[in-house]
Image (cartoon, rainbow, N blue to C red; front, side, top):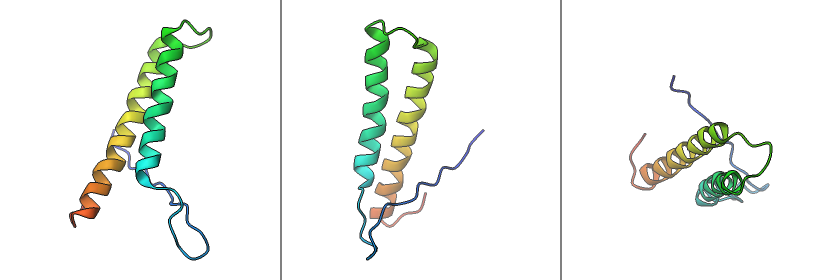
Length: 78
């Protein structure tokens, strides 16, 4: 199933972007990486398969954000 995700932009009262898409995609990848390190360290209560699946989905979302930004900056639509 292919679901589209729309992320609202965080802007100030003048419409200036406050959170860069690159920062959002980096954050998504960082969270997934930290979860994986916790599993590798034997953190109790974390299911390895669930963490792996969630990490993959976060990476896919980060990739989609990056691709959309590249397409936007090059004048293409995704």
